Amino acid sequence: MDRIVIPYPGPDDPGHIVVIELDELPYGTLHWQIRIDDGSGDDEIFAAEEDPNGVVPARLRTHLRDSLVQAFGIADQAGGGVPAPCEVVLPASYFDTPVHRWQLADEAPLGDPAHLPVGVRRRIVLRNVDRRGTPDGPRLERWSAAAGSGSFSAGRIPPAGGHLKERHVSGLPPSGIPVLCHRAGLGTGRLAMQSLLAAGHGIALWRIDGHESGSCGADCEDLHKGVAELLAGTGSAPELPDRLRRIREEIHEGRTVGHWAEAVAVLYDDPRRPIPERPVWPVDSP
Image (cartoon, rainbow, N blue to C red):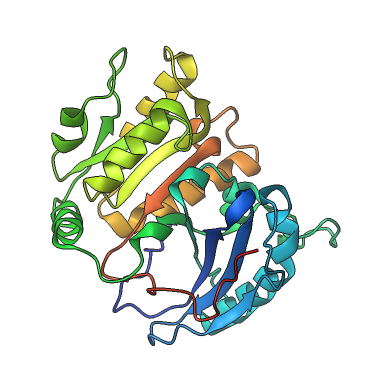
């Protein structure tokens, strides 16, 4: 029997979402802050980086993890013990950050969920920090069209053996979900992601350890085949984050190995839930 899929909350759905917001500061450092979105519209910050110089990306997890554990505890309790989803709002150049692989404790008792990678226990989605504020019409229209399509298909961006062209992005039907076997923050993948964001796409999948350019290999074919099967079994957009999480759970439990989904990140940027215009706490530049 197929297990129940937990849909990702929409703007009118009950539930709490833990939100990590990352802003890039000069010299390649990051300012982080954490919010708990309970649907009330209160954008109060739960915790934030106190160093005005920010933190280097390599130390991001250790700087925010204690606060993140506390935020998850509050959100989980409010949701009756169901692990709250987590969305990471960050610049597109950081879309390959392996948040779904993060573990929130170096040491913990055996069986403690803190040993689990975050993406095994929780629905993890990414959003673009440059989309703060009220969304424009094209984004809303594309989201509504995709959400109402009834079925999804995988759109390989760029096509196998081809160079990225604007028509590859603009020609995707409403039901077409962009899939990249490239990294989203480098080379061809970065150009593709920039085009997808500019065209208003709110859903996309990619490999955070994919190739930067050049020819595709066997891993790429496994990815595109796997995503096509995943999307074919997905009845609505809110199902997608949990269906991906469940595959990661199977990988972690050893029920499947060498799976295409281990390195996959998902953009799930619902314009009906706008990102606050700016941080409530000002971000000071060094």
